[in-house]
Structure formats: C-alpha cells, structure tokens
View 1 (cartoon, rainbow, N blue to C red):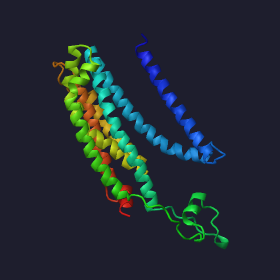
View 2 (cartoon, rainbow, N blue to C red):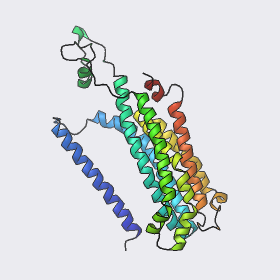
View 3 (cartoon, helix red, strand yellow):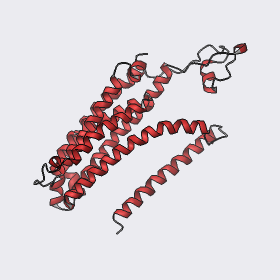
View 4 (tube, rainbow, N blue to C red):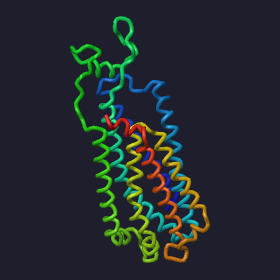
Length: 303
C-alpha cells in the first residue's frame, strides 16, 4: 500500500542495515587483531575523503542517468514504465556478477602490484634510523636478523600481468554465460515477473538490448576493477562521466525517444539506446585509460 514511499523506505533500511553490519564486523576484526584505536585519525579520513570525492561524482553521474532513463520510460506510458522496471532490474542483477568479478580483480591486482613494487623506505637519518618509516614498511624491509636494508621474505603471489590476463578470460566466459542465460531464460523470467501478456510483450520488445549489452556491461565493470586495483580512481571517474554524457544526450533527444513508440514497448527502444550507449562509451574510455602507454596498470604489470 505504500507504493513508491514504501520502496524508498525499504531501500534506505536495507542499505542502512548493510552499513551497520559491515561497521560492526570491521570493528570486531580490528579489536581482535590488537588495534586499540578503532577510529581513524583525521589525516587518514582526509586522505580517504579526497578519493571519495572523485568517486562520489562518478556515482552521481551513473545514478542520474539511471533516474533519467526511468523517468523517460514512465513518461511514455504506465505500461512502458512497468516494463522498463522489469528489464532494468534484470539488467542490473546480471551486472552484479560482473561487479563481483571486478571486486575480485581489484583486490588481487592491488595485492599483486604492492608485492611486485613494494614501497620504498624513507631516507635514513643519524645512526641508520628511519623515524618516518611506518611499522608495515619496517616489517617488510627488515626481516628478523637481516638488517633494515634487507627485504623480508614476502610470500609470492600471482603477478599483476597474470591477474589481468585471467580476469580478461573470466570476463569473456561471463559474457558468454550471461548472454546464453538471458536468451534462453527470457520467457521464464518474464512469465514469473510480468502478470499480463501486454506487459510481457513490452518487456520482450527491448529484451535484445538486455542480452546484447552484456559484453559492454561486463567490460565496463571489469575495467573499473582494473582501474581501482591500480589506484587510478580519476580514470574510473573519467570513464563514467564520459559515458554518461552521450547517454544523457540521447535520453533527452526527442528523435531517439520516439524510436519504436508504435511498438509494444511504447518508446522503450529509445531509452535503451541511451543506456547501451552509456555502457559502451564507459567501457571504451575505461579500457583506453587502462591500456594507454604509461598507464599504472601496464607500467606496473610488466614488473
């Protein structure tokens, strides 16, 4: 009975509960590892805020484009709005698998890059001491009985290049899997989610966009993982903004929004043209950023 208000409230409660559980888990882990001071210092918070400001702008662009697409679909007709809600949620649910792969790639690449190129110690002062070195740096470089200048034995892990290559292979396999499942399971998904034939027909009219946009969607998310893992947060934000610009322009173009207006989708074709353009440009710009000469991914993966 609450309709839109209930949906907004449920979303807010779900996100708040997730943040609460994560905060409590991190606090428990920090206390268990012997950290007496759980709260970060002001310098750490400021450093994180600088990166977060770029990522906040990036997230805002994506959310604004998604909201604009939903508004354009709802403005076409109630049927088009309902069909778009179904197809968009299926599209986003499939992208969560790509997001999971991107998160794994981000963590593995960051670990591999830190192992391949460990941080240098600050210059030694009087008596060979390095007062500005962190505890982690001293433990890394000063193995027991090896002297401070010796590099401690670090467990060998996968090389950065190996992480990138395996991620590319898994991305290709994920694209094939998602396209196959969405193609073969279309009727089953629509029958379980759409209560009447008209709504199923409207959703089916734009289903090819849901299926064939998967390569661009998977590539966009995985490239984000590469850029995040190499700490190129600006590159990830640039890719998102570059994709959002043509997507928003297409969603505001009357000629695009009237494409397929007479079909069962009632104008949804134009909305999905904008969404697919957003993902395609985002993936292209992000890939160009990651593979450009001198990029942090390639430069540090060659070590």
